[in-house]
Each structure stands twice: as structure tokens, then as C-alpha cells.
Amino acid sequence: DQQVKQNSPSLSVQEGRISILNCDYTNSMFDYFLWYKKYPAEGPTFLISISSIKDKNEDGRFTVFLNKSAKHLSLHIVPSQPGDSAVYFCAASVSGSARQLTFGSGTQLTVLP
Amino acid sequence: DSGVTQTPKHLITATGQRVTLRCSPRSGDLSVYWYQQSLDQGLQFLIQYYNGEERAKGNILERFSAQQFPDLHSELNLSSLELGDSALYFCASQPTRSNTGELFFGEGSRLTVL
Image (cartoon, rainbow over all chains, first blue to last red; front, side, top):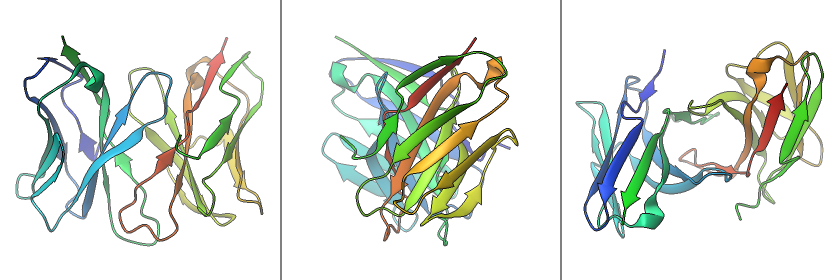
């Protein structure tokens, strides 16, 4: 049972335009959501996060939106840059003593110059 | 640099063999997680240790085992290897007072089973 789903394996966007990466989840107990970025031959690195008590969090060019009723979150990158080309993983966690992350399968973003 | 160190970076071995992957967490982090990423797959949680004790188990095969030592480094042991075990294995550590679950990942160990 995949509790965190990223239904788009890949996305191509023109440089300067907006990239929108989507993520759906099924477990209503998730209360914290994170986005990780991964370049080839490197480990995933933390990008941005959002608590379930918020519906938006912004950090520079990156904004994450959370729609709890739809169990959906999205990552907006604007403007997109070629250096943003990477695999983006959505992850979620439940509060508790072992706050482990459940990851989606990732979306390969390619930003075309 | 995340501060998490994994060795070896690459490993090629044959079916039926056994390998050990090693991880040193960030200084001060007590939690170590192991994840597996197979080709075109997401990150599958294998197992978590906290201060030397197993805290949570995910989709870890019985042929795999792990431990965390008193100096907090961790080892993932993979035995009776099969072709399907070829994957990237990531170790991650978590800040002790994390309220979010944020993890810091190493660069991974790429295992190829021939």
C-alpha cells in the first residue's frame, strides 16, 4: 500500500516558467510533509517542508502548498532554472517516537534552457 | 556535504555472497535510517536504529540485518545476495530533537550483484 504517491514520473519545463510537482497521500495521520531533491550520484537533500497546520510555505523560488481535504500537496518552483533538473521526492511523517519518513516514488524534473 | 558518511560508494559482487555497508551519522545524531532505492523506484524504508537499539522496521528482507554500534555508526549486512538486491542503499541520520522527521542522507552505496 503506497501511502505517498507521485503519479508523474517525469516533468519537462522551459527555463523561466513555473514547475509544479504533485504529491498525494492516503494516511490522514501524516502531519508533516517534506520535499527532497536528488541529483544523480548524490543522496537526497532537504528542500522545503510544511506542517499540517499550514496550507502554504515559501522559501525563495520554492513554495509548497498543502490541501488537507484533498490529501494533496504540490511544490511550485518559479522561475525554473536548469540547475533545478533533478528527481524530487515527496515525503510525509507522523508525529511520534519514531518519526520515520514515507517517501513517494519521485518525479524527474527537467528544465530546458 | 550532509555530514553522513557511507562506505563503500560502489560494490560489485556475485549472487550468493554477503556484503556489509557502513554508515557514520552526523555528529550528535543518535538515529540512523537505512533506505533502499532500486532502479526507477522510490526510497524504500528498511530499518531505523536509535542510540544502538532497533526502533522501527520497514520492508527489510530476512536476509538483511543491521546494527548500530556504541560509537553510533551503523552497518547493514546483506547476505545470500540475489540479482534483485542490486540497488542504491542510503543511510540517513536524524537530529535528536527533530519534530519534523527531517533526515540527512549520505551519498549512498551502489550495490551491483552479478
